[in-house]
Length: 351
Image (tube, rainbow, N blue to C red; front, top):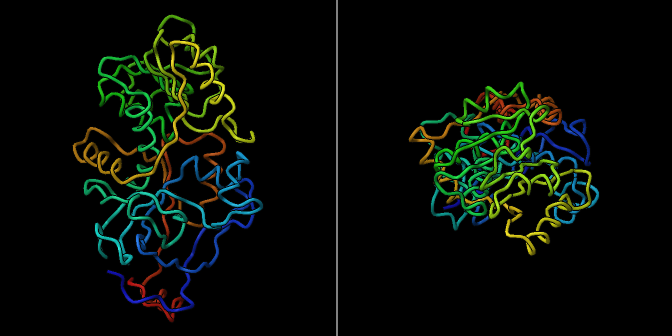
């Protein structure tokens, strides 16, 4: 059930942006603590993962996404989506969580001390993981799972190629493909090859030196994660009835970010190969399945580094420059009880 409503004047520290742009638009400021709706949960954020979706929301590109997020400036000025933390308050219709529960999942505006997430996009945090580890799982691992299982329909023994194997989605795709019984080849830079091998990849290709489409090997399934390979090259690397799944937009400067994917859908109508677009969904059922793999030790969280709230801009810059292996997290520094009381003089939030 819902607890007593928050009093007016309650604020928190959050990473916000007043306009679209690069990481330079981000700043830390006081912001009102959000109030959960009937089907929502208020979370005390312990860690928040940084993913490509957050970068796209920051830049407002592809431009078509602004129809939903705000034409000239973000409707929600607080950054972040991945979250791990402790439930503080629940909406009147919430049945799966109670105050004190440790959760992970999706809460828009998670680069803050508190965030609100829909019950249907949250799961109980794996007990074997720290909050920092849990926060880098939901969106990226959930996307990888859907790409392999739902769209790619991978089968044991199949040959799978993962382009972008060292990134957030790719690092989980390598592991999950192995869990599902596939033979995995990852494409990454030479400096990240050892990392991709450590995830379980059977083969690793250097994208600056090796050509995955040199016809020496053909694949049942290709996950092209934000890549820029032409449809011709992808088809050349596929088996006759193979599938290529496009994961993420191909170029943030495009109007839709899906030009190549849409062309692939048309080509698929005339060839035996399938070129499919993934429209990933954020859902608790996938996070619960991932929890089983994490608890059993079959899947590991690909946590690269941790940044404080006031260094969120640095973390995003690292992502923009392609320097991140796996994922990084933003960790709010919650004030001590005395400090919190002073700052939230009218607050009834639990510490």
